[in-house]
Structures are given as structure tokens and as C-alpha cells.
Length: 358
Image 1 (cartoon, one colour):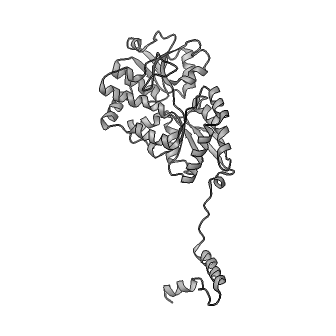
Image 2 (cartoon, helix red, strand yellow; image 1 turned 120 degrees about the horizontal axis):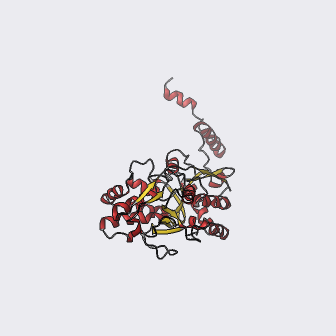
Image 3 (spheres, helix red, strand yellow; image 1 turned 90 degrees about the vertical axis):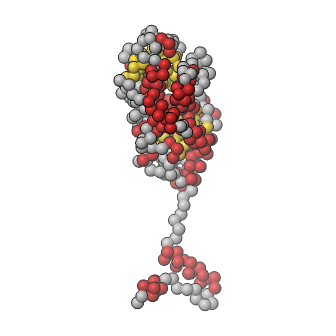
């Protein structure tokens, strides 16, 4: 018997003469059994029902990212098809790079792992093209709010402005070499002659705040203003002396504090400062791995669009000093791509200016 004959013998029988529709149905059933019926495509509601979404934070402390994740975790299930549960999964390390790499390379691409990571992971990719993630390939779901980030000195340091920081060494704290707490002071040292000395290795902002109060540090190169307001004494007793805002324009709440783009008028410096200053506008965002089925991405984005309009959510965020100013996922993805679109010359200048200093 030839292979063709064998295949013919295994094939469903043709519709018998005179059987009409009944024969056709019988043939179809046999064909489905023989060739295999197409798999049932789950709807988002079917997929998410009974499951848990992991909300991965790039920090272990009770700072803005952890607070935002916990508040989101309360409201998101209300608007997600299938009403899945949520759980917080802290993953600190390398200024949120560890969490970003996990989402890009290890996490399942099924829509069950969402990340709350700082926008400087986009800057880190410009500085380090070999970084094991690509922000432009990630799935951007929503921006909850832009960040109001400042560099500041402690009230006992004797430094109250940038000009004084050119005259006196100021010991600043940072987690690692890739975040703005380190990169911005290093850039300013090279551009305008400040004397910031960055001590790295702190687990998170909370650890740095405690180090300030113990007298180990004299300032921080970057901190969210809302986090400072939440700490008793930091703002209400003027323990924090703002030096600069990491922004392309002055922060409304701190109109007397210069934006970093005001600190140099050299064209090469301005290109670098504009890129550094644009990062906080990406803001406190929610991202996910690439390659998630499109219908689940749409379900997640629609759910977040509803969450950020929920009056209870807005009120809970306000109580945490987190003022909601959302950007939808599609617009956010486009904004990230635009922010990362820098010339090769500017990218090299960024690497040179923000390289670690001992």
C-alpha cells in the first residue's frame, strides 16, 4: 500500500449519496476529530477569572511606588474582566532595573504581571544600550501621575542653594549608579562644578531618609516631593532645602526652585539636561512585558482608564500625596519613544556626564 493509499484509508468517508445535510454534518464531525478542532480562544473575562495579577514594584520600601501599587491593587479588580485578585511583589535592585529586566525576560507574557518602575529605566537604556530590556518594546498601560522630583540638602549641611554646593562638598545618598539620585549630581559636578559626593548602596528612599536623620547624609540627588511631604518635619519644619527640580520647567509647588535646564546655558549641556529633565514626565507608570495578547492589553488599558477616573481612587491617592494626572497607554508609549529619541552625540554626552564618580 502506498502512503497515499494509507492516508486515504485513514481519511473520513465521503458524504454518502442521498444523505444530504446529515451526511455533510457527519463528515464535518469526523473531519474535526481527524484533523483536530480549533482551540477555543479565551476572552479576557474567561482568562482572568479566578487568577491573580502580580503588581511588581521596583522598591521594597513604603514609598510612592509601593503606595500606588497598593491603591491600584484595591481598585483594578473592579474594572478588570473576570475580576482577578492582585498581590504586591516587591523586587528592588539597581534603581528598578532588576524589576524591568524581570518583566522583559522572565515573566510570562500573559497579562498577569504588571510593573511599577521609575521612568529612569528609559534613560538607563540610552546610557547602556546593552541593558537586557527595551522600553520601546514593553507594554505601557497607563501613567498615573508625572513625578515632581527635586535634589535637596539637609538643613544641617550649611548648603541651601546650588551656588553654595559649588563651594562645599555635600554627601548625597543613592541606591545605585543608574538612578537620578546619582546621575544628576554627577552630571552637575561636570557641568557647573558642584561638589556632590554620592554614596551608593541604600536600599530605597526610606533608608536614605533615615540616614539623613542620623546625620550620615547631607542630602539626596533626587526624591519625589510628595514623599518628602509625607515625612514629618521634612517640609513642614524646613528640614529639606530644595536645590533644583529635575524637570524641563519649574514645579508649580516650588516656583522658586530652578529646573535643572536653568543651571547651564551651554548647548551641549542643555541637550543633556533636557533629556534628564524630561524623564519625570514619563512619571509613575504601569508597564507589562511585551507580547501580551492584544485583547488582554486592551482590557488592561480600559480598566486603568476607568481606575484613574474613579473618585475613590483619586481621593486615596491624594491622601498619599499622589496627585493623579493620567496619560493613557497608547499616548504614553508614544511619549516614551519620543523621549528616548536622542542623537548619537547627545547619547554619548549623557554617558560622559553621568558616568560614576568616586
